[in-house]
Every structure is written in C-alpha cells, then in structure tokens.
Amino acid sequence: MTDLPLALVTGASRGIGAAVAHQLAPTHRLLLGGRDADALAALAKELPGAQPWPVDLTDPASLERAAADIASLDVLVHSAGVARLGRIEEASAAAWRENFEVNTLAVVELTRLLLPALRTAHGHVVVINSGAGLNARPGWSPYAASKFAVRAFADALREEEPAIRVTSIYPGRTDTEMQQTIFKGEGREYDTTHLLKADSVATAVVTAVSATPDAHLTELMLKPR
Ligand SMILES: NC(=O)c1ccc[n+]([C@@H]2O[C@H](COP(=O)([O-])OP(=O)(O)OC[C@H]3O[C@@H](n4cnc5c(N)ncnc54)[C@H](OP(=O)(O)O)[C@@H]3O)[C@@H](O)[C@H]2O)c1
Image (cartoon, rainbow, N blue to C red; front, side, top):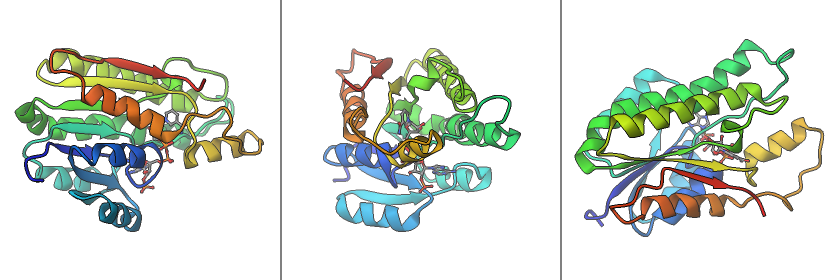
C-alpha cells in the first residue's frame, strides 16, 4: 500500500470529490479533503489507504499547516467548490467573494503550497471546472467568473510547470447536493433525468490521471447526453 502513488482530493466529503476518491482508491493512497470531519472519517473507513485531510480551504493558516506535511504528491484533484448564483443587479459582493475564495483563490494557494511536492513526484493537477467556466449565462456570472479565472490559472500553470500535468475538466450539470441547491434557486423540482452522474465526472478524472506518460489530457468537456 505504501508504494501506491499519493492523491489529495479536495471536496471529498460528498458529490464529485467523493466519487473521485472512490475511483482513485484502488490505485492510490488518498488524502480526503473537506470540512465535514465525520463524513471524511466515514469515507476513510470505506477506502483502504485513505485518511481524512480536514481543512477549511479559505483559512490560509490552516491550509499552510495541512500542506506542510506533504513532501511528495502524485495527484492533486481540486473538487471543492461553491455555487453562489445571481443576476448582476442582485448578487452581493459577499456572494462574488465566496465563489472566488473557494473556486479560485483556494485552488491557487493550495497548488502553490504543494508545488514542491508536485514537482518532486512529477505530479498531476486536476481542476474540476464547469461548463460555466466556458460560457457566462445570465444569472450565473458570480460563479462563472470564478471558474473563468481558475481556467486561466490552470492554463498558466501548465505552461509554467512543464514537469507537472494539468487537466481542466468542464462538467455540465451533475447530480450532487450543489445541483439540488441550484434547482431550488431556480424554483424547479429536482429531477436527475438530464444530469450527469458524479461517477461519470470521476471517470474523466481517472482517464486523465491514468493517461500514458507521453500524453497530456489538458481539457475534458462532459455534457449530459
Ligand atoms: N454539481 C454540478 O452540477 C457541477 C457541475 C460542474 C462543475 N461542478 C464543480 O464540481 C466541483 C464539485 O461540486 P459538487 O457538485 O460535488 O459540490 P457539492 O456536492 O456541493 O460538494 C462541494 C464540496 O466542496 C467542499 N467545500 C466547499 N467549501 C469548502 C471549504 N471552504 N473548504 C473545504 N472544502 C469545501 C465541501 O466539503 P465540506 O462541506 O465538507 O466542507 C464538499 O465536499 C465544484 O468545483 C463545482 O463547481 C459541479
């Protein structure tokens, strides 16, 4: 087990991150990121070689402490995210700030702190972006802007750090708690008929991570069929 590569998955307490953790578990040791310590402990029990990595990504001091112990890292999956939506005339500065704190700045800072560990392992960074990171639709701009920004970050990281593979994944609407909240905000009854499964997004992550060493899957777009 100690020979297996090490992966850190943020947002592993539920949704897409939990699905990614399940799919990486057979081939990786895992650090499970999130704030819900109980959910992380329960998941760690299910997955051999996994341990909780509870940290609030928006707390720089905690983040620095938690990252300090990681000397070598093969895979970093940024799945933690929030979606605070709203039309420009009504979305508060706090909503904009929260999207940027979690979806952009936490991704930037955690990656920066772990760069030495990623360089050591010739590692792979996967950013779970969103269809909203490619198209800004009415009512979505506070979230979309944070995802456009993290796309720029991933593109620059790929150029600046040739030893590291960097993949941005752009899923469409996916069946998770985040999507339930979005439906509620749209005044619609929750219906998974036209949603991706979290497992399908996780399969895209595994596809990128398990690509042959000569190949670099830089961007993957997934839409519900
Ligand atoms: N669902 C969709 O339709 C969809 C579509 C495209 C892209 N995405 C993206 O996919 C990613 C995962 O979304 P999801 O649908 O799985 O969302 P989710 O079910 O709401 O889960 C969000 C995860 O992020 C973690 N998180 C949020 N704020 C955090 C913070 N301050 N510190 C640490 N962890 C934090 C949560 O952990 P705790 O609650 O334990 O803190 C949770 O594990 C996000 O980046 C999202 O933007 C989602």
